[in-house]
Structures are given as structure tokens and as C-alpha cells.
Amino acid sequence: MSEHDDRGHHRGHHSEGQIERPGWWRRAHRDWRLWVAVGLMLIGMIVYLMTMDEAVPPGGPAGQPMPAAAGP
Image (cartoon, rainbow, N blue to C red; front, side):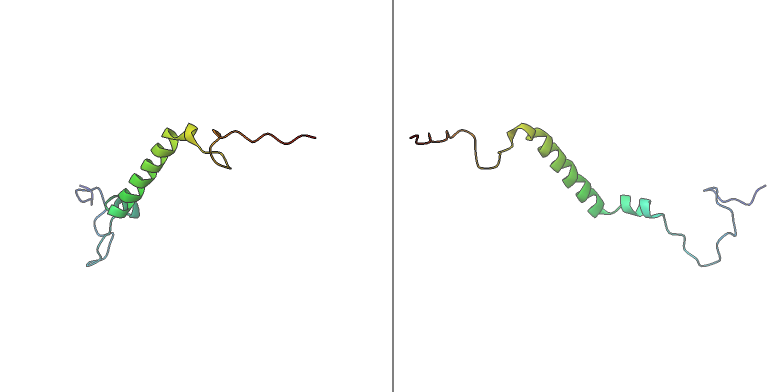
């Protein structure tokens, strides 16, 4: 028989009393702040894509005609 526990790790690899912490990616998945940031980014991307053609050009809306220049 091999010296492995039920997760496949080698027994005796860590010293007694040492707590094995999960990796940073697993801890990040359980952090509510990550999911709030991901949600806000997705909302921002959806709003950006849905309003792409509704941008207001510099100088205000284009609906106002320019006054005619006075000629000589």
C-alpha cells in the first residue's frame, strides 16, 4: 500500500500541528468582495454595450442647428 491519504497527498509530508490552508484561488472564490467586483464589472460591460450608439458628442446634442454666419 502507498502512503497517501484520501485526498491523494503523501502522509507525513507536513509536520504535526501544521494546518494546511487552501490555495489563494479557492479562498478568493469564497470571498464576497470578489463576487461583488465581478458583478459590477459585468453590469458595467452590459450597460456599455447597450448604450454604444447613444453617446453624446462633445459640445452637446447634435439636434441644434448652427446659426448662419453674417456675410458681407
